[in-house]
Length: 270
Image (cartoon, rainbow, N blue to C red; front, side, top):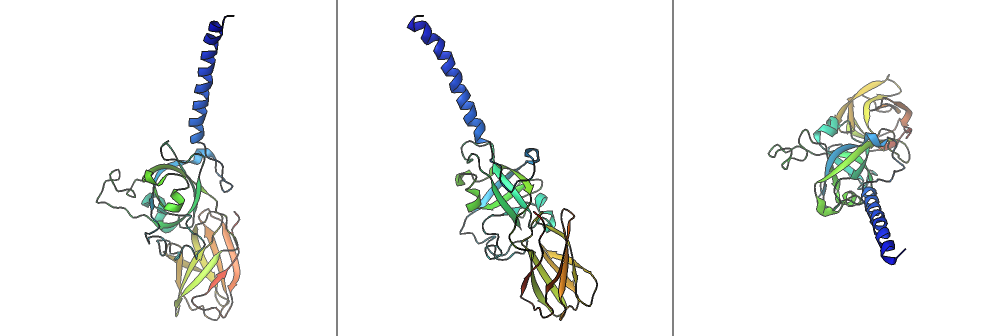
């Protein structure tokens, strides 16, 4: 076989290998490594969009619609998110965990990455803008507002308003559920944090040594309240998660508990 004929046969094979390699590179950009936190199948990914707030912005550092206060001291750090109206569920979603990944944009997405974030705040709608014209958190948009530290793990910051996919996952926490007791007189307010499993709480009951189980009302976020004289009694709590699982922690607070103290109970399975 002449050198010319051999070259003519090798050129199509080389082009085929080049196209195959290019296709693999493009597809690998959209592959997300499975996180050890992920428990749901790929089919449960849902579309949304995400923006970020800068580190100099005080929003979400202290406060927030879920009532967690200082997110660093509460153990949530920068792995948090604010959610739009259609995702926030009037605060019941507070504490839930999500896996988020960037999609569809070859310029800005960081390939093969995803982040785990906890719902800690509400992204309020801005009805001065249309949902597709600046009203990022308006109905019917599914929208995440991330700290820039979290956003930059899945996308380049210049991307700004990015298409993403998200899915709900189980939360993993160290230690037990925490109960921060506040109030005055017979008004008792309890902030519930560090919740594993579904992460969110749908119902709470409290019990003193001289009472039966008393239902508490949701004040806001994961702050729960009741008007009852429970001083000088050990306090027990019954929690029902958003997934319908009930967890009972007896004698979480001793009979000499006081306002401003935090106690730790049992933990949901993750």
